[in-house]
Amino acid sequence: MITSIIKNVFPLNRRTEMSKVEYVAKKFSAFILIYFLSAVIGEGIIIGSLMALGYDPLHGDMPKGDAAILLSYYGFAVFATITIIYCKIFEKRTIKDLGLNKKVSNFLIGALYAAILLIIIVSISILANAIEYKSINQNIPIKSFVLFLIGFTIQSCTEEIMCRGFLLNSLRKKISLWPAIIISSTAFALPHFSSMTGSVEYVIVGTINMYLISFIFSMLVIEKENLWISCGLHSAWNFILYFVMGLTLSGGESQSTGIIILNIKDKSILNGGEFGVEASIITTVVYAIVFAVLFKKMKGKMDNGRIQ
Image (cartoon, rainbow, N blue to C red; front, side, top):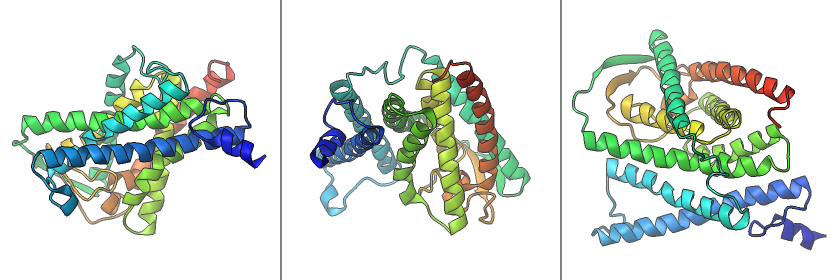
């Protein structure tokens, strides 16, 4: 029996006839395998590329500043590639099956949603005296704008391909909708936990917000029946928050100058402290409202049999 379970949960097989628990374990272990394999391959590619450029990364000689940040974002292309290859070989799924269909216009719709959400959150934060508007930066280089836009698109789309295109859609074949959403959202949250900083209230609120936005991503993917909508929302959120507004992204140590120069006032639960607005209670309220609206809309479709 133990041998059978091990064979079933082993991620490099095409078996589907197994218990729901075994199936979930198999898909989650596949996600972990893809993640770590991609990290190793990506690290190797980056080290080799840097050495070819004259750096000595094995002894700490690395690019600094924006170059280092962009390098990590562009490296996510390896994760996307490995995920797509895995799905092609072991699940017989195409890119279209992952949700990247012809409805590319949904990417722009998702980006618009991100802009609206951030405008609302930051505006409320300014009114609450948690964030201060300073001025507009007139010296943003076009090259940096383009490079960061592409970098955030690669990074964000990769996370969506892995967590929702692959894991969420795979889980939905065997288990019901909400367990699939919760499990795939946990996979989404795991890599972000290491950047959680500050006191316990920031960690709690940041974790709640991370799950809420992941639920929102998932519900949009299911409601629109494509992945582009969450790719656009995720990419634009990261780009606008970091590059346009110059605020901390997911607890990262670095901040950009930003096109709009904003100043975080005394660190509090209203502005998310060191983790940034993603650990703000204001963000929690806005996310919760969006979640409630989408949940009601999706429940109606589930009751009518339009969503299984």
